[in-house]
Structures are given as structure tokens and as C-alpha cells.
Length: 370
Image: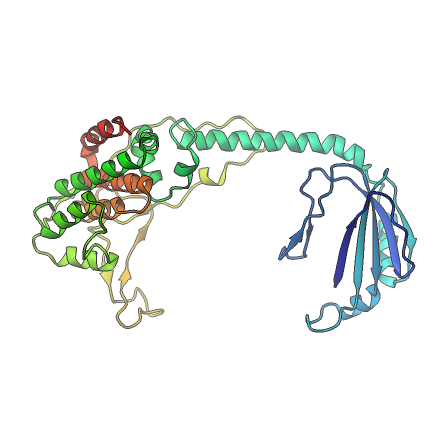
């Protein structure tokens, strides 16, 4: 159908070409009014102010359109509508009625109880809506502040991605310190974390690891096989010199539970609601060419990485070499902030229950000159 919106400063003259015309009143509750398609595919903002409007709804071809229902885009339009807004006191009425479908709907409308005036409705609804909006925002900010260790993050930290959430559990203050350190110090932190992780995993005697750490120190891209994520794991698994070392999981320090501001009827933020928990230590994450069932087998040359979802099993130990390699890969990230955060997080996992010693090495670097 064809649909046009017009916003006028004063009442526009009526056009006798329209077959059905009705006027109603409308008062926006905010400056964000929009005309939205039936299924939300598109929307248009008429830039209405929060004041009383008279709205004239004009239509043509409504009976023909009702009989046809919907039609392909390539067919000519059967009906069209015009919606005109102009500032005016509340008032409503049917100006012209031609179609049978409009007669049916007007009769139904006349049998409804009189609605509240736009001014009266806005007087009660608008303050309540604004109060609820403020309360919801305060709740979101309080939860976000709790997530980030008692302070709100800057834009860069908020958008960094990677494993920042994992590192927040271990040391939220360190996350903010790394954020404030500056690119040069962030690169130093990333290299230190990668080196410490490789030392803890017993990998520094390997030429490939030494070459990767040297490349990081010199600001060069990682050499092979670290330039290919799939190949690096194959190399790790096939090298008999890689030690079989495991470590218990790092236990984050106790944090006070988040207690949001009391807001009657408010729901918890989506990020506060129960998330998926996942576990997949490298000692049990295996590549396979065998399908899990009879359907969707992997294609030729493809492999499946089996991942287990659920609460972490405290009896499973982490493979230190498999956890140290992500510290190398993370330290090579293009963004210095993400490189530092990802490398430190991987090093924390590599150290496991011994991670406090690692964090003691990281903190002095963050506190140094920027």
C-alpha cells in the first residue's frame, strides 16, 4: 500500500479525493515516535514534538484492498493512505465514510468507553515512564559497576572483547590498571605474561616458542606455526618434547554478590540472568573425524572439536602447555589493550592455583612509567 505522512504547522485543507477520512488526537510521550511496518521491517520518524496533535487519517480503496488482502510487489497498489499531523487541542470525529470496512470499524469504536484525553494520559503515564526508565538505568549502571570491580569502564575497555571478563574475576583492579597503562606498557605486560606462561608450562626450551617470544619482543608477527591457529595445535600435540604438565584451576577471590537498587517490578539485566557455563580443558578437548551421531558427518578433510557445556568439573586439571599457547597468540593481538588482557588471562589459567605469584609480577609493570 502507499502511505504518506505529513507534519503541518496549521490545519491543512481537506482533499475531496479521499474516500474515508477520520480525525483523532495524539500526544507523543517522547521525541522518538515512529511509523513502523507491520512486522518491523522498516520504520520512519516523523520528528513529532511532545505536544497535542490533531491527526487526520485519509484512505482510498479500503474495500478493494480488504477483498484482495495482500498482493505481490509488482502489482499496482490497490489502496493508499495519508496521515496528517498539526498542533491542535484534543478532538475526534469521522469526517467522511465510504467503505464498508470503515463503517464496521467505526461502529465498533463507538461502542467502546471514552478514552482518557491525551493530556490526562500524559500527565499520569509520562512521569511514571520516566521514573521507571531512570530506575532501570540506575540498576543497569549499578550492575555494570559491580561486574567491573566497583568502577565503570571507559569506552575502550568496554569494547575490547576477548577474555576481559575472565580476568575481571581474578583481579578487577588489575584490569583497570592495564587499561590506564598506555599502549607501550600494555605491550610490555603482554610479553611478560606470555613469557611467564611459557616458563610455567615448560615450553621455553623449544625453538618455536623461543622464536615466537623473540618476535613479540621485537614487534614482529608471530612465525610459523603460530600464524596458523589450526596448525599450532597440531604441532603442539605431535611434538614429543612438549611436557605433560597439568595444573588445578585458578580460584578467583571471593567477591561480594551484586545487590541492585530496589526497584519494584524491575527485571534483572540480561547479563545478570543465568548464563551458559562451559568447560573444556585442553586435556579433554580433542579433535576427531568421527561424527557424534549418524547425521551431519564432517566433510572430507574436516575435523570436529568436541566441547562440553555445563558446570566446570573441579576434578579436571588443565593442560599447562595448551593454556600457555593462547598467551602467545593473545600477546600478538593488534590492539595493545586486548593483547595485554588476553595474554594475562591465559597466563592466569596456565598458573592455575599459583596465579597470585604471576599477578605479583604483573602489577609492578602496570605501575611503572607510561
